[in-house]
Length: 271
Image (cartoon, rainbow, N blue to C red):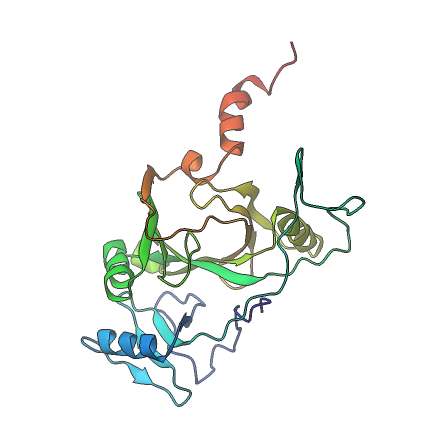
């Protein structure tokens, strides 16, 4: 569970309160999306109720399925805002930390502050985008051609909370989910502790281009990867979406350019 109350809940496969599993057997059973107030919840019920069954549960939440067959729950958000400063950075002319205030220690806390985003494998990417954009009002921030778009809901300024990747039907499910950390140092501390506990690194550490967020992905026993991220861009409706071909250079900043330039010659050479 993150510090703001969002997170991941693990239950038994046979829990009767869960929707049926996807045909692929992916362990993702339900996505819970928060809305700002009762009026927004009623608007979701009215919109989706036009062409599908929308159940109102005793706790006031809604339950339905999207056009790809993923089970969704909508409820009034209960997330809080952690009362914690962001990571402080020192730079010549602009010192974020006071004299004698160190930037990192082995004992520093490194706890996820919020659930950041989820990435889904979907067989019909156009249908998935249309549902979240046209029915739920999500905004497209950027697109990786050949993979899919990054989307954010209207009430969340993060570069993305959802990303879709086109895959065959037998792969449908959750590819990874991510948690926001307080900064790149917290990300490195959290990732190092994962390595010490025996978890296998899948990708990173590094920094994405679209979203600008630092990342470190780990394999998990949940049938998907888990990511720590930090320092993601935020956007409003004045943002003009970008598009780039899917590939290493579009997915990761700095490291891939370094490899492209130096790897064939064995690395940089001193003059």
